[in-house]
Length: 114
Image (cartoon, rainbow, N blue to C red; front, side, top):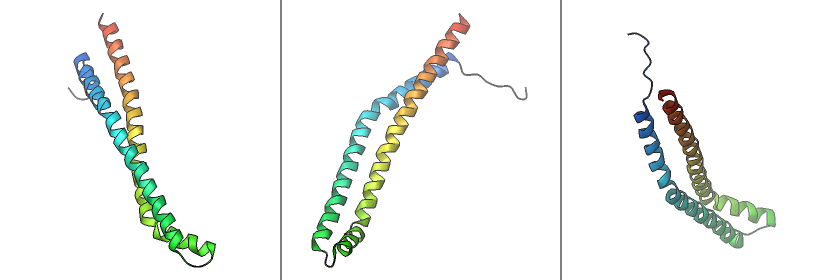
């Protein structure tokens, strides 16, 4: 039949719930590792900036500019690490929302079938 829509069964929804829950259980460890990596990268970038600032020569603005240029790569690494941490947090929030939606869908299916 053309255009026939296959609706998910309660078993399909339960499978999705189990998969989502399993992924959510991995979240805390991943978040911890990513947050630690971001903090370390930001510390390394600040340390690189401070070290370059102390060894730079010239006026204060010139020293700051030299330090910014010298620490640009490490600051970029810190931005990337922070972005990875923020993406993981957003994914967890999305999974939590999806789990609530799937649970509501399953409840509705059970009420419909009763």
